[in-house]
Amino acid sequence: MARTGRPREFDRDKAIDAATALFWAQGYEPTSLTQLKTCMGNISPASFYAAFGSKEALFREVVQRYLATYGQVMAPLWDKSLSPREAIERTLRGSARMQAAHTHPTGCLVVSGASNCSPENASIQTLLAAERQRTRAGIRACVERAIATGELQVSAATDVLPDILTTFFHGMTCEARDGMTSKNLDAAVTSLLTLWDINRMKPRNEQTEKDADEIRETRPTGFGAPFRIDQSINP
Image (cartoon, rainbow, N blue to C red):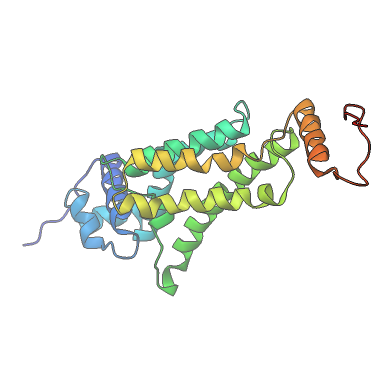
């Protein structure tokens, strides 16, 4: 005779942590309900649906858990007490360390969690795309703040700087999953930030001297050149 009664209780927080690791490692669509129930402590279907409602609802909860923990490496982007460059640097270096760590799946769940999904799971792609857009907006806000405060020049290079930084940030997921170490990722961040540094606004006295040097370099010489007071006159 079949046993009846209340579904077996389980530790919900531990179950979500286990589901986070599985979704992070495999992605949303390849992860089956059977795998989820097994990794969460061999819970019964009744317990699963009573606790989470559906696979999609569980994934949405997993994403929120991820953002509140591992995703906090992005927090410097919105910290106005940091200079824009420091905010970008802390975010990139922190993310590089997190994505390459071996205490959890490598890469970023928000980037790789739904890279390939069938049309019926488009809502999952939309969910993660919105989070990536939030990161993109945070990076752009840092660059725009740097321009507004005179830290960066207004130029064609700084116009595309947010796109370069965002592309690098999202690309770290692929490299981390392919085995690139945090040391190598950190070195790449150092190199990337030279793009920021060469577009810094020059101090006024430095810019004035640079302009003067350029004028001297482009001044014509020889016959027809303007006479300078320091030129020697040979009879």
